[in-house]
Length: 438
Image (cartoon, rainbow, N blue to C red; front, side):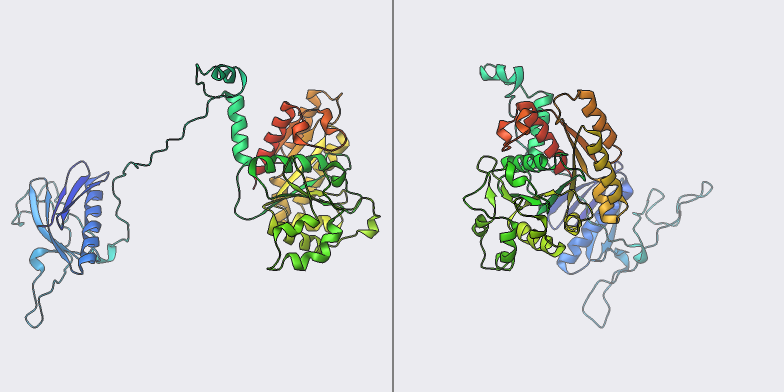
C-alpha cells in the first residue's frame, strides 16, 4: 500500500513501492507540496497514476496523483464501460475555511475534524524539483594546515616538540603563493605601462614573470614590446642565439601551423635558467626605424605567444600614441602601472590611467582594475614618500603595492633569488594582486 503522512512540524513520510522517504519542510503546507511532487515522480516512472492513502493528524483519506501532479479524489476514479480500465483525474476543489459562526463543513461525511490536504488545481501546478534532506558526505575535507616554518613558531616546530600553526605574516605569504600558483582557463596577457622612461617597467616585467613562473610552473613569457631600444634583453639572460621578435615575425605562419612544436620557439626566445620563464627580446642595437612593427605585427606575435604560453607579460615603450602600444592594450587582460617615488613618474602613470578611462569601455575597465607597483628606486627616499605615492593611486586603481629599495634591482642581470627576503615577499604580494585580476 502506498501511504503518505504529514506532521504539524513540517516533516512528512512517504511509503511508495516499498520504499520509505522522509521529507523536511518549514510548514505542513510545504511538506504536502513536496509529497505531491514525490508521488508525481513515482507515477511518471510507473507510467500510470498512483492511489495513495494520506494520514494527517487523526484524519485519513484516499487520493489519486498522476505524473503531472494533478490530484483527484479516489472516489472520482472509475473505469469507462467501453474501454479498458484507466484512471480519470478530476481536480478536487479545496473547501473554503468556515466562518466563526458556522460549524466546520457540517455536510462532510468524514466529520468536522477533517481538513483536506490542499493541492493546487491544474492551472496552478508549478514545476519545482523535489528537495531531499541534506546528507553529510563521506568524503569529508581532511586537509590539514601545514605547521609554521618561519619566525619563532617555525623555530619551535623545528625542534619537533611542537606543531604550531603559522602566524599572520606566514599565513598571508601562503595565500599569495596560492594566488600566483593558479592556472587559468585560457592564456592571459599583462601589460606593464608608464609614459615615462625609468619608471621601473622593465624590472616589474622581469620580477612578475619570475614570481609567476617560479610558483606556477612553466608557460610564462616576458615580451619586449618596445620600438625604441627596449632593454628587457639587457637585464635578462641570453640564450645560445641572437634571436629577437624581428626574427620571429617571418616565422609566424609556420609557428601557428599544425606542424609546429613548442620547442621550435627556442630559436627566438631566451630561457631564464633560474627563474624559469622565457624572454622575447626587441633589438635595442638597431635604430627605431629599422625595427618598426605595426599593430598587425603585434597581433601576429601575440597569437604565437598565447598559443604556446599561458601567461604573457608585455614590457611597453613610452609612446602611448604608438599604434603598437595601442594594439598591446587591445590584447591586455590586466594592466600594471609601474612607477617609482619620483613625482614625474607617478604623475605620468596617473595621467595614463585617466586617458585610458576616456578611451573606450574596455580601456576604462582596464584602468579601473589596474594594479600600481611603486618601487623605491632611490635609496634616500623615505617610507612616507613610498606610502604617499601608493595612497595617491588608490582612487585610480584596484590595488597599489609598494616595493622596498634593494641594491640588487639597480643594475645588471635581474634575478629573483638575488633579492633580499623582504623584497622577494613584496614582489610576491604584488604578483598576488595581479593574479586577482586574471
